[in-house]
Every structure is written in structure tokens, then in C-alpha cells.
Length: 142
View (tube, rainbow, N blue to C red):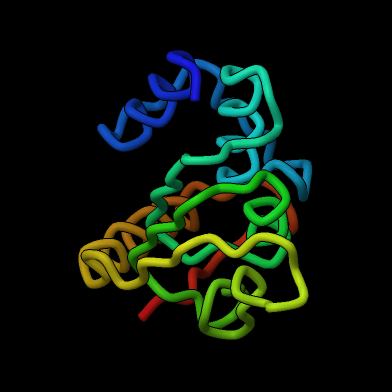
């Protein structure tokens, strides 16, 4: 993986918001995991992210799980389980489907309680400042 992609992932792991991290609340595909994958692929100069590890607070959804498989991400590490939309072991298990040509390693539940609390605080603040219709107002975490 190129230096740019590694820097991007290092920024994510350090809790810093990478410069190319500008999501629009008006686009269903502008999910943070998908944005991170796009930015890492752009920085690496390839859609294949072989050897990359994605670390996220909440279990990826179906769209992101599919993108992880297609991008050939080696490892997915997440904290809180998403009972409503999780696709990496809880509701679905897209990344371990034997019919697919790539199956990343999954490390689930890393600092799960801390991640759940972080997400609860984030979404509570978002609900207080919500301005547009259709904004999500809950996070399913355990």
C-alpha cells in the first residue's frame, strides 16, 4: 500500500479527520467506511487494498461489507455490533460468504463498550442539532 493510503489510515486510527473526509448528509452512498475505502484506493493508486486493515467503531453495513470484499481488504476490525444493519457477523455475514472470491479476516468487539458509548454520545448530539428531514436519529449498538 502506498504512503498516502497508509497516512490516511494512520490519521483514521489516531482519531484525526483526514482532509478528504467530506461526507454529504444528502447521499446514501456517503457512508464514512465507503469514503475511507475510496480515499485509500485513490491514495494507493489502485482499487485493490490488499494488506489493508479497516478499523471502525461500528460494524459495517451491507454496502460497506460488499465494498470491503471487492476492494480485497485483508482485515476488518470493529467495536460495536450493529443489530439493525450489521453485515460482518451480526445480522448478516457478507464478508465470510463462501461464494465470494475474497474473505477478509474479521476481528469483532474490540473495545465494544467504549465504541458503543462513543456512538451513543455522537448520535445524541446529532439528534439535538438535527436540521433536515430523514436524518438518522438512532444507532443500534450493544
